[in-house]
Length: 205
Image (tube, rainbow, N blue to C red; front, side, top):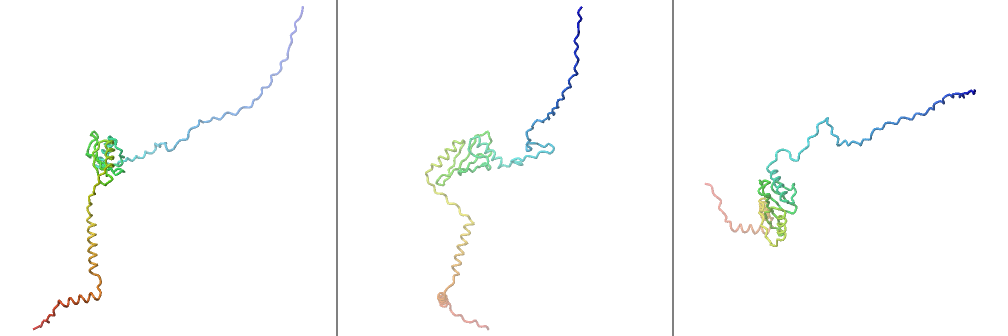
């Protein structure tokens, strides 16, 4: 009878565990934030400054007329800047004077303006216009004016007239007080002596 033999192996001791170096922990990085514009930051701890308005206080009649004229000019498509209106009148760069008429007209009425345009000969031509096209035509007609006009004499300023009269009197007075030579003095004395008669001395009683 055969006998079985067991092969016994000696258990080897477990190999020592390898020590691995610890990796340094990754630093936590904060998300990048865009720089803040301090000019746009509103500090709510302090009240906001009061914004100034273009028109302070109640509007007078001049401002109201200027607003109505500007609105009417915009409705008529007239090339007139808003700041050119002073009351119902606007003086343009080319010398044209526009007047909104009537000055109290409302915005729902048809815009109407009086245009005063000076021609090359010095005369002033007046037109009533309602649109920008009519203003262009009025300027063209005035530029093509070939009628010579004599400008009306301007009234003399009273102060200038008084000054001229005073200068005339001063010249006359200075001419009367010119020094005389000896010949003129002798002739004057001779004439005076011929016309004068001697008078008797009055006697006292």
